[in-house]
Length: 125
Image (tube, rainbow, N blue to C red; front, side):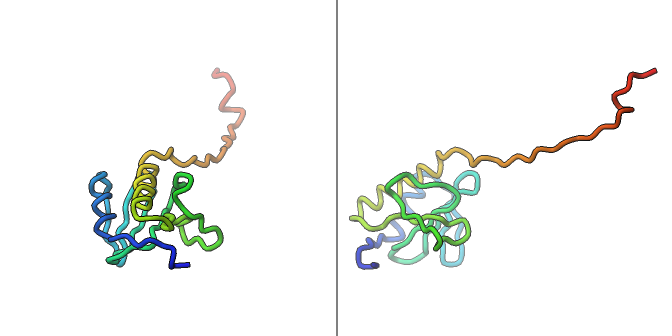
């Protein structure tokens, strides 16, 4: 299965991130690319990268593989690296663009009721 994965130089991927102006954080073993609303992309800090994790948003159709039950934390997808290098780099750019442009996640609202006593609504004397 790993035979069909295209490995990309870490520095090429980092250059694209820098060119597009994304904020990053160096983590142990990972470069975390930060988007709005807790959207993240994780690049392993290796000379050659064969896996890119996507967390907190849905990647554009045809750019990623859904992890399903194999997901971990907020990571539900990985960039599809099964293509020639230029195609993988195009997918990476598309995912970065989606991360920046994705609508904010729906906020869950909780309905609350406020009980008032009748004395609060009684006319003043």
